[in-house]
Length: 227
Length: 227
DNA sequence: GGCTTCAATATTGTTGACAATCTGTGTAAC
DNA sequence: GTTACACAGATTGTCAACAATATTGAAGCC
Image (cartoon, rainbow over all chains, first blue to last red; front, side, top):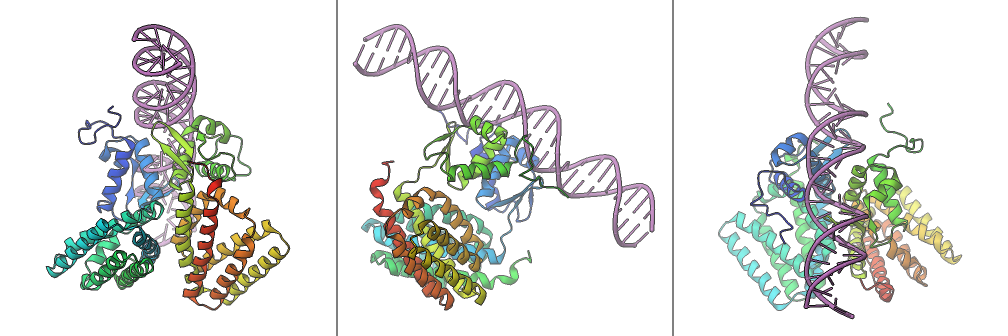
């Protein structure tokens, strides 16, 4: 039953709504549209080979995710996230990921604990080798695995939405010298607490980790545009 | 400049998109559409005197809020929130309101502290008088005031969204006998901690309060439909 | 020169119609 | 009696055209 059209082999004709939404989100997250940039429906129509109806539906969904802002009769633009907002968003992530870490500690299986430990080892190797990009990828995998172990759909969805709003800031963060040396032991503490099934320790470790991310964010203040 | 049309005096013609969304949300929250009930676009068109385009936009927004679910080619229905999901949602609220309470403790002014204390006194009076409805209203006002003091837009928006998903469950909760006697001292602890500018205590008190809500939720298990 | 006014243009808001898909019912074959 | 099928009705998905609104630039006035 070929109910869903294969995206790869889709003819040069129109795109489905979900495809357009995903493509536009990737373009925004990939930095092809900068914060504050206007998203004109006609242009998107041409770029994504979709009708205005489809484009508009995609814009509305992304507005719901906080990636863009829409004003009546004035169209959509990529949302600018101020430093203060970035801090707020990360504070929310801090408590949510803390909740998730605690729940992961309660539910982790031996196999999953081994997977966590393996990521921890690779992280240390990456830091030792100075492979920052690889460390950043592992960082994302670690947080994703913890969320998977926790199986907390509600928190997971919110965290994922918030993460999208911060791509630009997080990119700047990963450029900060000395971050890996600071965060590696924090990650290791998180892994250890989950392995030990110590929920309060896991929550505390995760919160401490993200609290230090917030501090680092604040040091970026000058790099932030005025508005 | 009468850019915005006055809702009250709006002619019997079409409704604006935002109005339709708000009206539909109120109808769902007010229980006029039950969980699982299908929301047929044509019916909504007639009820809200809006075009299908407008109705569809409203449905998409409410889907983003988690109030309804949309399936391709199968339309929208009011979301059923299982007990497990209600617990998850309340867990998220627990950590978010904890964050907000801590921040309120850091930022509260003397005037605001006095307002909090006044609500606390009225709560006690309402419990003593057995006025449960009034106590429930005060409960909502208390949480709202704390969030206003904190001024944490990101957490605030998420909490508000989650609250909408739980109206039905919270209604059942307020019917539980003995709840006010349990929650009143918890509320008083929260107020005292914020008044004392003790952020960690405020967070702990708020988390303890909502944790007991979660426990109460779990006792509702048999009242919950199978799916 | 700077400010207001006004028209031209660009862009978004909305509509009704048509196409695609799903759902339920009745019929026929086994 | 049960299953498979096909058809009809209901419902959603998409489109292109039209209406309403905001923006831009130039002309006129002080």
